[in-house]
Image (cartoon, rainbow, N blue to C red; front, side, top):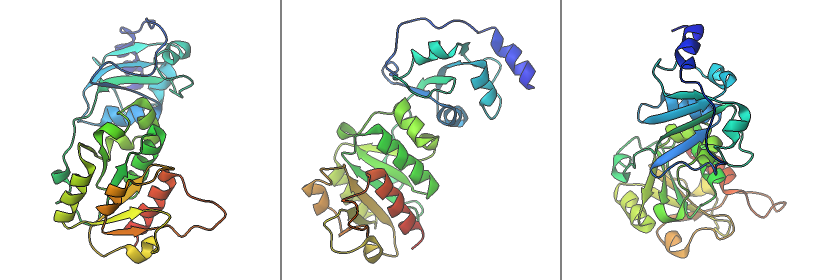
Length: 262
């Protein structure tokens, strides 16, 4: 379908936005995503069930690929879209409501390519950090990220925007008991490395040749003692004394690079 034909096909569903100012949250069981990369990746993900796209005409034109003629879309202006997302969120003329992705299970990935590391996040709750870690995971070929369901952010527009499309690429495994998940990784042959500034060994010294699970804790608090106790080794990144520590998403990116280039 040509671009002009696509516009004609979508124009019949155009209309003004209704409702008050939004928080950026979708209804229960749904996710509301915004921004070109996040929306485009979700539209291309066959695992996604899409409910509705609100967009400016410029936003539609920025997408790579064609939308089906019967895709549920409503044209809106920038001000209307701002009411659907978190305050000051950079929606870039695109807001998509879709079903949340189905939960994945750890045993789907522990038997996968041993060269692809797992990323384990212990109570990392900032959605910007989780999104950035997903993006680094996609860049360096991580098999999945693993979080504790009760202490991690929900799937959201903030996570998706920070991930810049990687939310659709890197599987996100939510578990009830993170310590038990680490035990399952060990049973599957993964060497569990906890990243912490008080470790003696550097990451390069701690890295084995086989499968690796990189474990990172929240900024400030770091890993909980019980989670440290479920690691096979503790390691640090060799940073200078000019800074006390790195942002968890930066640390994850460096650790992933070191793991994939060992």
